[in-house]
Image 1 (cartoon, rainbow, N blue to C red):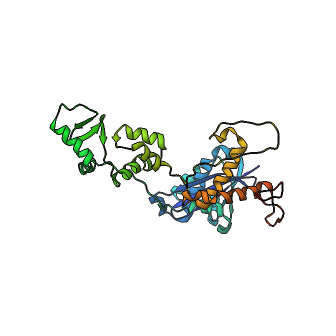
Image 2 (cartoon, rainbow, N blue to C red; image 1 turned 135 degrees about the vertical axis):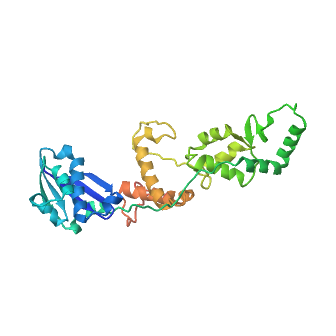
Length: 322
């Protein structure tokens, strides 16, 4: 089957699609350099055709292909007698190719039009940046804590005081780790830095906790990290999936590992997609939608008509309400 290349250029970008048998098989988009944006549209279209042919050389070499563009003047590309020096360099790259340039109206050139006119900017809906831990703030909060201040005073009075606490470089430490006061403003900031930020990487409870205990210490640290990492929704954090294939033999799979049970994984994927769509902005509300997700899945999988008055998606086999 022959190949076709559709090209398009805008004021800041160029795009191309490689087609075989009326099906796209490859896409190409490129942002124009500042110096190229000042060139006439004819030159930008010519440059796009050259770049597309070079990119897909392995497909086109030794074959006749068609280049479709909305720039009518390119139809007479190889018939011009007077050609600028820059155009000569570009046309010379076509000498080994056998192709035909065909005009295609811009309104019909939708695929490449989208590639060449993709906005160069984007909107930031959420920006996460690491917040450095300020040791001066930690020291100030420790001095406000009566219990920790008492420990600091005792250590300063007696250098021979033995124990797990010590003062190093002016900071109160516990087993070599910086002691942090149980401040309602300081602890959330630390947890955000070590878990939510780019520095934290949303590593989960265990990895976040291990990183924290290697550097910091405060009373009740483990519970604070666990609560911050994954708050439960009305006390629930998992769903239980039962797959009944109506036979006597049972197949056991590993708990909390749906990948070992293909049918369960399919069910979970569908439920996750449903919940992600309806409560994506407020994930904690997923428990309120789980019953509707069950209804939706049963309607699709069991093909129960919505207008059926004798059977519901919760009871498709025995015609009894659950």
